[in-house]
Image (cartoon, rainbow, N blue to C red; front, side, top):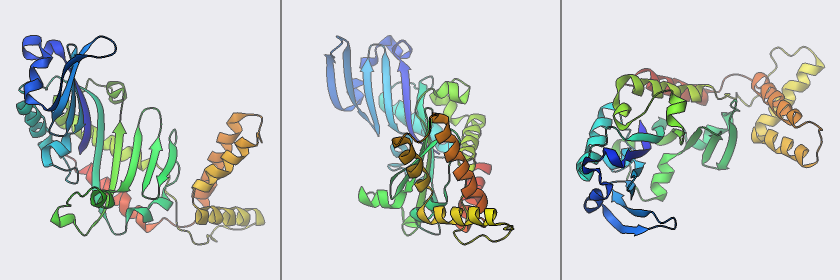
Length: 309
């Protein structure tokens, strides 16, 4: 279930100690030259990877999945990962087993009953992440360490002219990616190399992390009126207020808090965070029964994680 992966191979670990020896095996080569810092550099392409070479080492950035399958609509399972790394080795004529992983994206496409855009209104907040609806088709959760991305893979493939495999051609493809763009070793609490990626214990663990990130997102509920448990004017007002927020979309909470910030409504910055948290808690608690679309996603993602091997 890996997609984008970044690797760093130390120059001293390359056979002969000469990283530039791989240049004849690259496409679209920019020959060795001095950059603005006076360091000799070169670059090129191999499979889906952009390759940057200095005497210090070799940097590779690209999609392991696209390199192996030719697209990232297929899912790269653990058994394919070793073959994909070996394919890179064969093309470069070096051994990348000890190459350090500096970025890793865990991702798959989930066939769903409805288009992905129909699911987004039921995604709530996530602790320590900032929710961003970048476009109608794309939803992000960002923090300084990780990024969760949800989007319509079928629409993206069509826009880029990518041929969707026949079994999936008429499906709604809900894409979920958990991106770890930096400090991979610190976040995963182990030294991650290219060979680690297909270790069964590591692979199972990182898929569980992918699942847990989704699990920790608040799931909003049905947009219908909630009357059960209403026994006072106060709880009735809260339920009605939550219903109106749900109809407008959960993002209206951020819009409201940002407007308060612009007017310097509160003397303490922490009050804005507290207000946002309280409004979201009210929304999740007061807006009805669990949505069937979220149940569908939760069940499918749980099954993927449970049987990841």
